[in-house]
Length: 186
Image 1: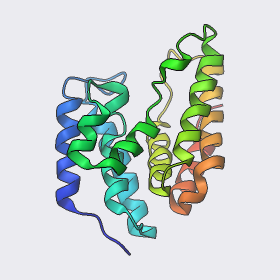
Image 2: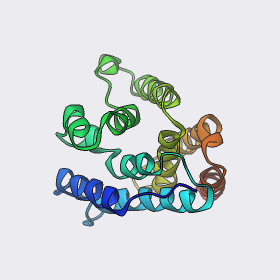
Image 3: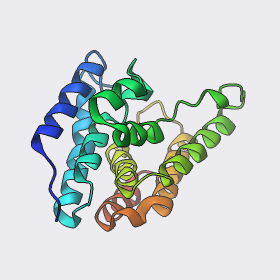
């Protein structure tokens, strides 16, 4: 079993903390860093169960996966700080694609963005697939009260799609995600 480096974890955690410093966990006054910690915890648990050839890649990307999407961080900054593999992994996990901003129908745009993101993730090493699984596990908390039944249903269907497409990367995370999906509201 290949282990991950605590120094690499701390470096990525610190970078993420600074990048997301003023952001809050949606619907709370808690720091956004909580979400990143939850995702990294899922990755670390999977690595303890299964191992990984590139454990540092998985751990670092788990902490950095939202930096391009939700902060002013650039791909070049990630590459300089963490190397090309991490920058590419985070880029694949990022759903901000300007090519889809012209689509006016919200559902059509969301579908195109999800398809594009999953396609880019599948081109990456399995460790990046694991981060997407861990991210969705972390996001399957009770839905916000303002979500409609349709939004909840779509989100649950997306989780099932992520599981079906990426689940082979980690039996441990696939089982965790399947369990969360079955307990998610209809």
